[in-house]
Length: 226
Image (tube, rainbow, N blue to C red; front, top):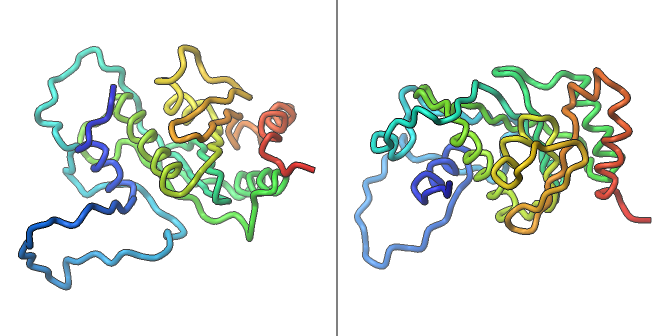
């Protein structure tokens, strides 16, 4: 289902993506108050949790008829890193949890192996679902929000690769583009020219060392060419 312009703008605002609009040709009187004007930072905070104030609702939610057949999805958290300009990494987490030190260390080693570590692994940005206190639990909403987030990174920051670590982010991002369940090593074309690669989650890699071989075969396409 296509995402409406209003809903897309709401998702981008929720995710902290600054959008630029053409200047209004007619002068408009604005009443600015210093204590209500948000300061736009030049850099992304080291840790961002996507969440909304209490009682926030999706735009147009009051006009959306109830769909008794809408697939529901439980609460979850996604940890997102951008260790290099061209790579976005997304790993699924339990609600409210943060990556363990061992998981962050493993990801740093993986990024180092494919030449994407740079000056080190920064803290992740967190995307929490549902994004508000409203009863927003339908799966299509979660798919749309992640799709908008990834599309913004691809179009605005030049991301060329999206590493989907674990079943959750892979299923949410690729379910609308594929008729089969995402599998390890799967590569999918994304809008804007980027490609997504599916691997086990960081938790799975720590718990089952035998998965590391399949993971390396899947991601070595991103390693520096000799």
